[in-house]
Length: 63
Image (cartoon, rainbow, N blue to C red):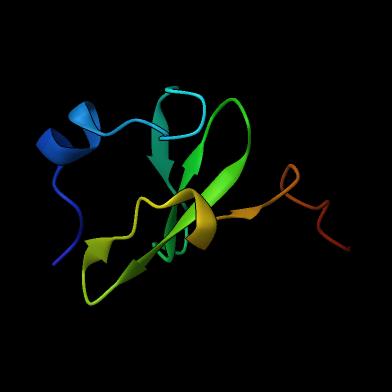
């Protein structure tokens, strides 16, 4: 079961209060502003700043 669209609408980054989006691999929620990624464990987003990692833009794919 994935994160519901209704839940994604109300969740915000606890660090900067910006919108979060589900990562393509559904492993976490990524902040659109500060690029923190909050993990999803047992289908529950862990929205703690201490648990987040900072991720740069998606790396360029190798040909």
